[in-house]
Image (cartoon, rainbow, N blue to C red; front, side, top):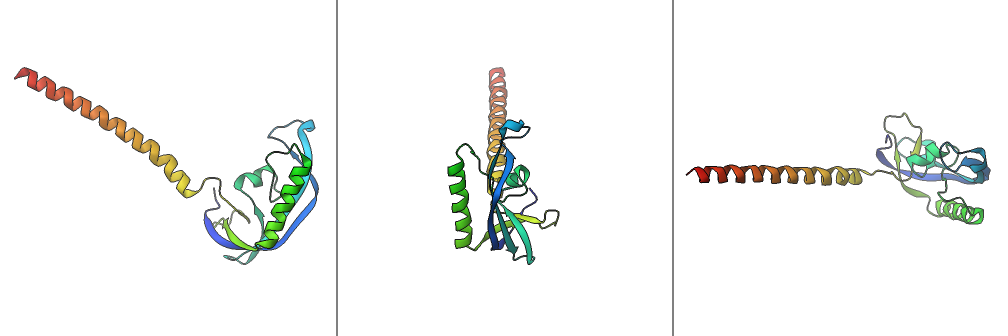
Length: 155
């Protein structure tokens, strides 16, 4: 993910646009495309002073670049509308919050939360590495034990 640097964002606008069409999944057929209200949140990125669009996660930008929030389950349109209105009111209530931006400048938008935070990646790689090291240590100890056993049998 390119959104690695944390900064503070301040809400400038939180608008709910009319319904937009979004496929339920990648490569979906036309009948699986349905409308839902589009929440657009514009924030002031304090690190640069720019007005940029906020997305929930990296995945939100890929799913629909026009909306800041894309609901996961889109079966019940009333629930989706209520959830989006709740999120919009929370942004109006809590105007300042931490967000992540791209320090390299390739992305001119920010995200609210990272899908894969640094701690998560550390634990994802640390646990298998420790297990592998422990397994190798067991093999080495067994080989040493076999060697000592052969030496003692000769004497």
